[in-house]
Amino acid sequence: MLSLHSLVLVCCILSRVIGSTGTPTFRQQRQPQPPRALQEDPGDYLADGSWAADDNGIASPPPPAGDDGEAEEWDEEGEGEDGPLLDLLADKAGGGPKRKQALRPVPGNGVYLGAILEGEGQMQPFNQRTGIHHAAFMKFIKFPQVLTDTEGEMKALASFMRECRENDAMAMLTLETPDGLNSYTAKEVRKFAQLINRWADVPVFLRWNHEMNGSWNVWGQQPDLYKAKFEEFAKMMRKHSKQVAMVWTPNQEWGFPWKDGQHYNASIDPYDPYLQFLPDKSLVDWIGISYFHFGHEVRGKNLIPGNNIVPLPHSFFPPIEDFYRFAQRLNDDSKNPQLPILIAETSAVWNVDGPVNRNYMEEQANGGGG
Image (tube, rainbow, N blue to C red; front, top):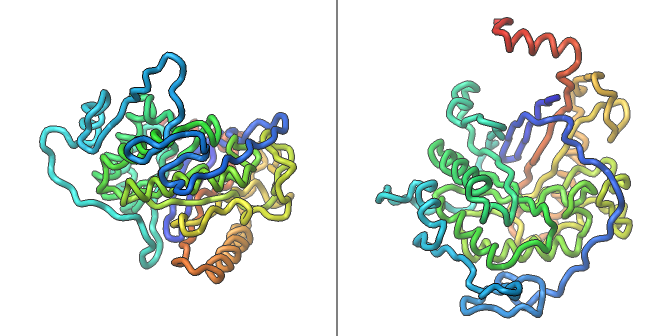
């Protein structure tokens, strides 16, 4: 089953085709991991005071038993075991043209339009088919797996970044830590920054562990730990990468705190869907939400499969307007630059396996329908 999934940013709009069966499986409740105390400069340290910094001011955990501590590194010139592969994927090998350093993406006048292309979709044909030169494209990546899975995650990221460069598009990377918020080291964050810097001419939105207020994500509903880890990551990215904007995007508030979720945390404030998860505003460049339309009969509930109902006119306005008011309060109270607002993900779930839709799709697949 598929649904049309649009991702809108003010100032960036993205669209996506997803599986409507991708809703999380809800199981047992689990308690959040306790936050660790931060060092004086969390830009160079992870949240564990027992880890010592190396000569470059970057902290690393003690090596596992039997490890000589000589971790694989990449430097700015591409040295290291994976350097040649990355140079090839980044189009930097063979004396390629010197490219201009990009800066963090900032709001422009009007709206940026972009897309998420699933499967083998390519940007240039998509732009031609839609008649729109999309300003941004999105990709989900797993961290720290993207640093080691050279034939999977890393290769896919390299291909995506190269395609963004070729199509003069910004890249939105939704970074997920599937093994939890304490599943990586500071050295891996630095290596990630070095990896992204191989496409330093491509502006990057880094959407870090999105929908952190949701009970369906392993990193979800752990506000203190989440904020500490976001701030660490943001400080290190700002230190090592000039072209990366940090993006904070909770899920829209309807149904919060979603008590049936696998990672529901009863200790969070059930009346605060956003603010308790917000990191230091000075380390956030963009804010936004995810909003999905599951039907207008029962708010926050899905309709019976096959009962497709097109969203009512203006039905997307209320949750977006609610978040806009939240953002207004943040900006009114802030001494920092005004935070631009985006709609990170949005869609209306549509069951294409319904009898009418199935017949139509089969007709299209068989070359009919014009």
